[in-house]
Length: 235
Image 1 (tube, helix red, strand yellow):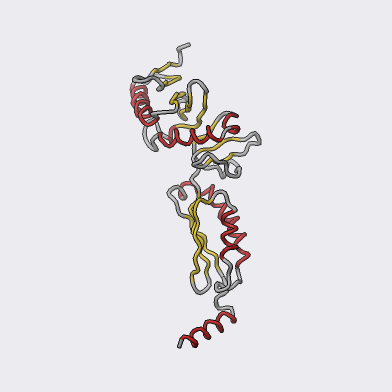
Image 2 (cartoon, one colour; image 1 turned 45 degrees about the horizontal axis):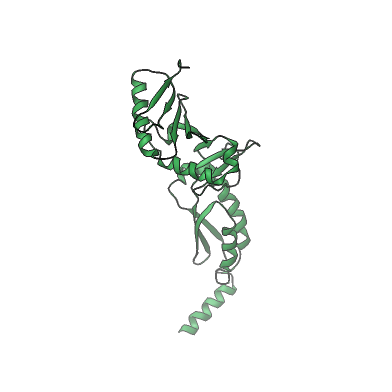
């Protein structure tokens, strides 16, 4: 019986029954759905590279060749490969989360991932909807980009002061990080430590200013126990 099965499988393989007709690429990750414009072109490029394996037998396919292509992509964090019989190669990818963007001098946007590394630059149509780093110092110092990632991670995803309400992040050697709020143009000085606590305080101040229709220019949360507000009319 085993010999008969092996013979049948060999015969089917010789007839091309197990030749790859489809390479299925599946993206996993919490932010994939919200960053389709960024990931779709990358997946498209990957699909073209995987055309190399179409027509090869699943039995004789060298998975090391597939792995080599996947390992060459700096936007992929984790990947796995499996054979889906009789003729599909399944590639599951967990992409790197883009935490920030940096605008290069060529007008291209450079995505920044968890460890502060740059990915390949993209145009505005493909750029993920995340906070933009402003300042040449971020191009020069990876460790500062990593600090910026840690700061943005501590700012809440929702609320009066949150990732959704800020557009840019800057850095000053004396005062640390500050962010610019989108709708109001308020500069919020947030520093480098206790960012979650400071963010909660800033949110309360933002709510207070809104309810009283007060036009602020700067919110300084770097003080130990209070928040300083500078109005537009202040010097």
